[in-house]
Length: 148
Image (tube, rainbow, N blue to C red; front, side):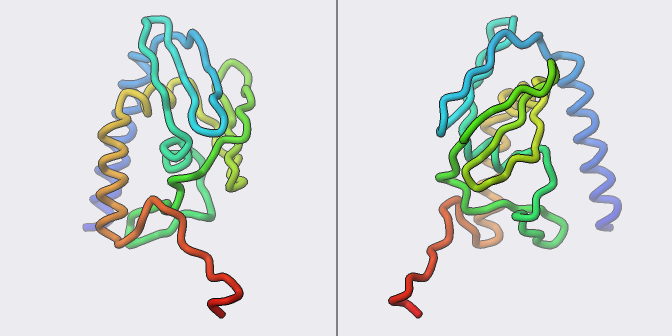
């Protein structure tokens, strides 16, 4: 049952990628508004402003800070994450460096377009997943020396 679910999810992601690749217009501009967001504009006039938290949660890289809960991968506590820099990667996209030191994800211009086009649905699903597992967008409280 779990294998079938993973297969269906993989097929949906593949179809979505193909759809995005076919429909993605040419990039017009990319600007970093550190530490809060990036703005991406395409030749057809579509513009997206994507928050640091949103980009961090939907990083295309595998990451050791992801919590596995059952078959779901969940990143929590990133509400206040910031973007330190964005480095171009050829004509393909950008590598974003976050202040939690995550820097391995390369975001293609097509991926930015996909994220922007589905931003509200993706964020809603992310928040639902956090609630389902009793997690929060806020960072966990660190114990001070007084609490020990």
